[in-house]
Length: 425
Image (cartoon, rainbow, N blue to C red):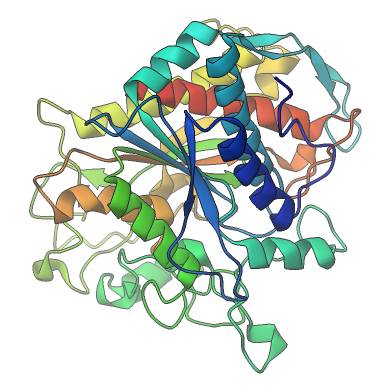
């Protein structure tokens, strides 16, 4: 069976990604269903996702994968479409998923690193699809991606369009950062003691200035693209959620709004802490001494042990990436493959912000909050992957080989997501 979508040699346009999703649903009708988001993009584009499952939903956990939230991050949408295609071809033909040996040359002038073949057994794909319902939404922000592709940056690493294309009479104020627009601590000034916060951090957990790349928008979930993600999380009752971004080699777990803690009175919904949260890590200089340091509650009680399980899953994804590079995660010997394939694991609150501070209105935190809003639902294990690196052309990796940047990133995305799906199954 010829695959309808193979490893791309150039970044795919929004139209090509939409066509690929339609092809997957048409080619594998017994396994794959095309779904349409309820809202069109700001520029009136339809946005689709695919559901991949062996049978009608029957209580299996839903795994939701999203990408393309930030326009300039070229690799995640392409890697997610190819991930879906690989799963479908393997399940239909019974063939293993095989990534051939490859080489990648780090920038600016590092020596080429050689990577061995890496295989996902067909038996594992079958086990995954017997155990989960998989939803893949590779391109949340098609308007922004197209704008970025039509306006190539001067600096391929540092520049590029990030936001959606929310209109504004002033071209410098167009767009909202979808990953700061979600309904979780969106109006951060009501949550934090901003005098304490800004005494320690250079800027807030999101921006209120529409000129900025992290502009949070005029209201929570004001953007149709944001509402689409929230709808998918809620409609599927997602149990596992991953938002794939680029770049930084990080596997980030929730919360992003604060360090995780064990005090159940410290929650985002508690009015007792309005305007009192500090956003600071325990032991931070300047931490107020007249009250306990605020930490956002995450249960670690049986049967789900949510806090511990978040760390376990994140570690599984990190180790799977190392194994895909031919590295034994349990052996610490330094070699080029380990150096260039090691992802940091930690909370978004400490690893995402440039200065190690909280972020608000993010996609993964919205997914994570749903278990607190509805105590009857199953826990939600939510993550962000920051794939790729500055040495792999940053936001706009080279797709050709050599240097093989995109091919390496794609392998890492597939390895991590397979590990998450395997855990879920």
